[in-house]
Image 1 (cartoon, rainbow, N blue to C red):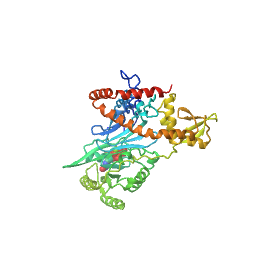
Image 2: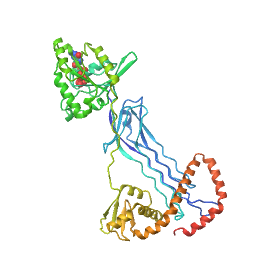
Image 3: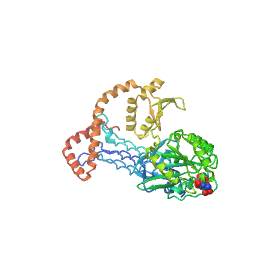
Image 4: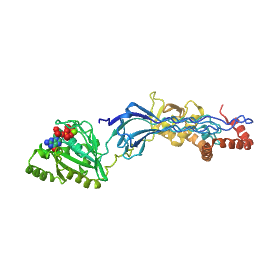
Length: 483
Ligand SMILES: Nc1nc2c(ncn2[C@@H]2O[C@H](COP(=O)(O)OP(=O)(O)OP(=O)(O)O)[C@@H](O)[C@H]2O)c(=O)[nH]1
Ligand SMILES: [Mg+2]
């Protein structure tokens, strides 16, 4: 049964919902405090290994998998709902690789194992989150971030217990057919087998799986023959069986098979293995004995057989059952990410030579989350930059008050830090306390979401009691609001 074992799809996490811009509206209090809630997170895309799919075939009908979009936050500090996750069912043995970077994202070898292949975006904060004693009426909110997006390559690596490795025409498929329920094509010419075949070998209460892969020739690692593509499957087996044609040149073939395996993955040579000397019906008993003796020098068990006549098959199955229990599962691929050190920020001159550009992935990501045309949002960002030392860095590089500074898609004005710092310090102390309070309010709002009905009543009560307080606050706001 031919099957597709490498496919490429596109996956994209859902966008996070934007925070809300909202002010409390009460009958007797025309201008209440800010109460815009957070946007919901976007849904992620997952892959999950399941039992009843064996190939990646059915995934090729669809090219893009997208997580659900997070909804925007709402007034009364209500958070937007989260976008739905999407799960792609894949066969056991699926390796997920970022097609552009080559990074291994996941290697699923057991049923039920899951991995996130595209994270959803994060919901933006609502304007309520930015309120403090200094900034009582924030007229801005945070945008949700876009979800992760990537071209994903899925590779299926058959997980069999035993992998048959041999030259074309050595009799691998014949052996698979003789030992198992599988009926692969057998023919007297090389490269009969073009895709891996899997069979199950059974004994009372015991069984193991065996994979027959296309033949390997010398210089396969340079693309000769069918290349080494199929060693992917062999690399996932616990035990290797080198199948040699006794009537050809078994010793030379074994040498070059080992060399090709090493070129593909040196660790494969350390995998438990045995040697199957096939087609012994074609040579006399003395030659068989001599061949076995020579091959034994590799330190591996040697079993002479004839797949066609059935000689030695019982011995072979016994040997496999003896060797298998101790053969460990091959290790999963390394999915630990390699971190690339990148400076947090860097300043360069802009094209005009008069302004400045601040580069930095994190910094640019923060800027992208706000409306750069919104005065309040820009004020907020400027204070944020101050804390991060952006202005200090600009000052050191030679920026003067009034210079244009570009960060991501937004342009700011540079101002002298020393003066700004004094102002900011005074604010900071109260801000810290207020942020904790804002966080508490958010958590409380989240909790009430679970019981929306009851929550709304409770909130209505609370608003009634806190009426006077709210009025004072609203009056203060009216004075302090930017025009
Ligand atoms: N005489 C003899 N012929 C055999 C034996 N085993 C296999 N053959 C023959 O060898 C030829 C190749 O057998 P296959 O099983 O197709 O070999 P393979 O290793 O799967 O070959 P590829 O799929 O091309 O890599 C066929 O004509 C088989 O009939 C054996 O034990 N004795
Ligand atoms: Mg074959």
